[in-house]
Length: 271
Image (cartoon, one colour):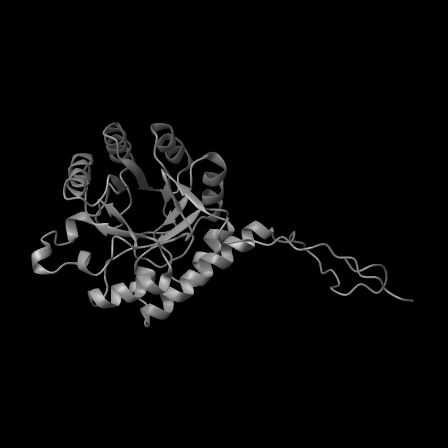
């Protein structure tokens, strides 16, 4: 018996159309990268380039703002990349607010990746301080992207304050443990209407792909690339993993089944 083959054109994902709308900006890349822990400014530059990222975070408290002495800012071209100041190292709302203002005053940006750390050992966020700082900075016209716990309620409150996105951790900063609670990340994605960006904990390309397959809008990482044996190669791997995870999510995975299903039917039509 002759078998007939029926097919429909597959859904094609056009990267030029699958854009990330964030605040008043639009980005093609869904991978954000940091600028800490690299062996040199040149290595950092090469990794940023290899990652394909458009958004690059810079810690206001940890960079030399005196351009006459040589600085990271001399190696990351602000005409090519969007520099996102962050308040890393701030342990109080007041300190984070002051640091964000400094970043704006020296001409970095009126955007801020807002961090208010609650514990020096775990580097978990202080959610009370985070909410306080976010409210003040939003009131001053900042576009705020807050780093927070994977807590759906806190993420909802941050969105209600007017944050442009929420950035729940996948695991503790610099741990490389991957996405420890994918269920909370998925609940957050379903609980807010603003973009969700997984921040912290990604250690391998598979972690980045898993995050994107959960339906988040982007992934931010630093140590996963900087601490790799071959950072530039890892930057390339992360770039590809984020793109693959995004396509996998948009394609829609097959349903999971307890028992096997034959891949090649013995009768009927191929679809």
